[in-house]
Length: 249
Image 1: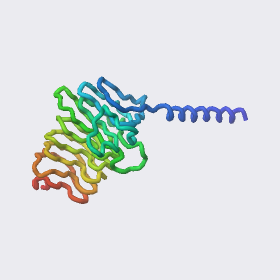
Image 2 (image 1 turned 180 degrees about the vertical axis):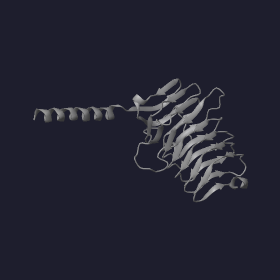
Image 3 (image 1 turned 90 degrees about the horizontal axis):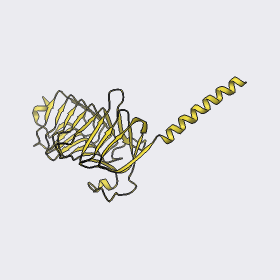
Image 4 (image 1 turned 45 degrees about the vertical axis):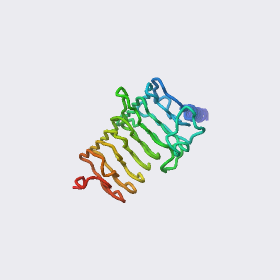
């Protein structure tokens, strides 16, 4: 009887300790980042409750294995300009400085909605608007889920590699003469397109773009896309909409 009681107490304390860890090992984040900030595995999951702006002097480093859960905005931060009307109803992460969001193969980073429902537009997405030549942006081994536009690239030549884009409206939206390098990524089950290109020149290599609801790659017919060694198939509305016909060979 004493042995049973002791085992019961041990299990009870293990459960309580686990429960307390789950309750208290959460970090809330929002607002302006204008210095160096690091999100660690110990502080994960990070709960984003309002818009985040990384200024031109700021740098955000997200460590491997970190989970970021994005909710609905509580207020509109007067210090962060809203990107558009949609941004007033959703949370965006805007990068005008540097961002290193680099997981590893066995410790991927996850950015998804706080809601357990797998639906698009639960949050706005990551907006890369770093014009400075000193800005460094790398997003690697990261899963981006449930956003309006997973990553919107307005400026620069960011590196996006080994990422998974799923259940978004758009996986990546490249625009405004930006030149993102998109390597070894998977785009699947996004609604409008895996990749949207408008007046931009992305380099897309070794990616799988499959089973998106409408388009695989959707271009504006005038952008120059450097496309190499990709598997693009099973996109129900079209695999290469608005792209050069030679890409279909």
